[in-house]
Length: 112
View: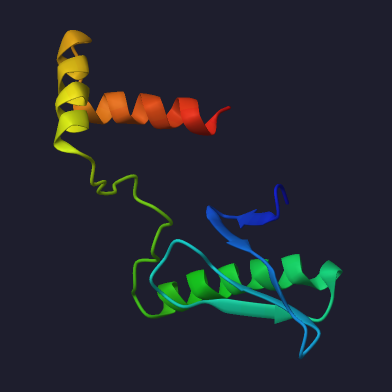
């Protein structure tokens, strides 16, 4: 676990705490299917998350369903026309694409 995020087989989650039931819980993030898990111990929560992922993959296999993948690498962003123009111009100058310029900028942002 790093930065409060659990990862397993390409799936990830963050864990929340419910004070009423004194339990930890979460759901697989980044997919449309709802897959949840819970545990009453810190030691057990990662085990339950992994079991939830394994159960999800087995369910998909048993039912002939393609498991959803977390994030396909595409998303839409709304920006000002002026910024859009500047990005397009920069892409042309660098013999690249708008996508390559945006990816480069995002990579620089998240790698800091």
